[in-house]
Length: 251
Ligand SMILES: O=P(O)(O)OC[C@H]1O[C@H](O[C@H]2O[C@H](CO)[C@@H](O)[C@H](O)[C@H]2O)[C@H](O)[C@@H](O)[C@@H]1O
Image (cartoon, rainbow, N blue to C red):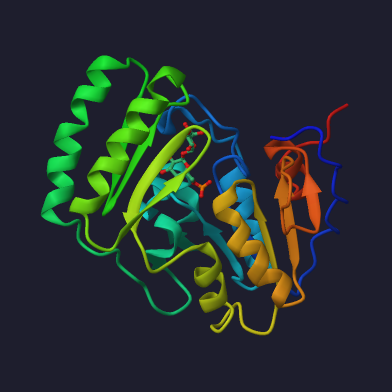
């Protein structure tokens, strides 16, 4: 987070004509050292279901995680529309989409990544369908080796791209992102004809901001970043949950 960036204005209060798209990690939930260690506040899932009902179903989680992982975090939300793996998979809005099968070479890359885990305790490798995420949030000293490993693996994975983050690198198939996933949902009931609102925190969310801005929607950056396309901002997940009415106001 670039704390020196000026704070963006807070988003307006929730309205019933919105189509609400919510990122998960770093937006609804505080980041944790590893993907498995995130905490889901009590009643958050329930509140998301309540908002979805108020919006006639027009609420979707839009995440880099798999739908299976999201269902594990939000078991109450099995009826909600969910976009997983940056748009490679989707449940809801009348048609489901399944992620492509992982190519055989990915299994070999996963096996080879084991040596990184031996060398860098705390580093973590997450395989989600056809996507491989190398995380070093809990082992910053692994950043260079994990980046080099992903770069070396890429030529073996046809149609794949690298997505670099501050605490990890992801190797995943091309062809979809959060922006295209949101644009597609906006063509379908129950989202069609509503004002799109997208809340997200990381650089992979910028394409979602661009799509909602192009539809006269509301883009909300969580945290601060230079050159974000978002027009509104909230400081962190706690404030996002408060804005959603999923957390009591601080005294
Ligand atoms: O699109 P999102 O919902 O923001 O998901 C993006 C990635 O989130 C998870 O990784 C991130 O959060 C972890 C828990 O806080 C953190 O340990 C890691 O450093 C972050 O990159 C998830 O594990 C990934 O699969 C998602 O792509």
